[in-house]
Image (cartoon, rainbow, N blue to C red; front, side, top):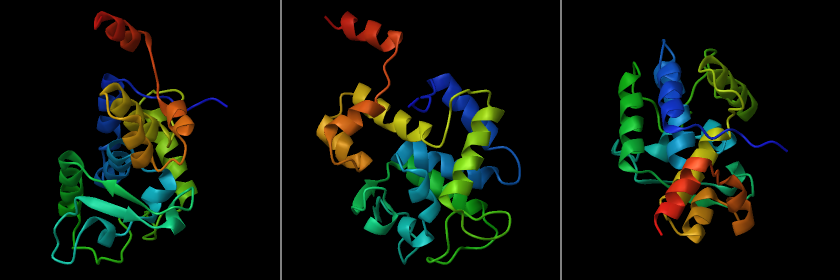
Length: 189
């Protein structure tokens, strides 16, 4: 089975620019950033409610908890939100005309309902087409997240836990390697 494309840094910037345009740009950018900066699966992104991202005082959380009901493996997990992602959440929230209720979905369709995983997956696929990135899909962000962590020297066990995988072999299949990375690796010697 062919894996989702992992964009280069330049391609990622182009994708963000394309996604951020238009009336629905802030919403679309939020979905994309949840994939790229938190490594969430499309179904996990679609299931997010504001209470997952914001506490009762309106402060952006540093971590969110995914219940077993919304994860692929059926295991609850904690997802850490770095400063960059927390800033993205704040920017998205400030773009909304009214403050959302904690039980309201984070991402709302044009028909004012929550996204299904399938609908969000199709929307994301269209973004890659608009950006001219063949092979991109809703899983590209997750692969980018895992690849970036691996190439930054993060412990494989930590990456496995952040991805919500049960086996290291699953995590290893997500890591993308290209000639530039291999060239840099041997230059360390």
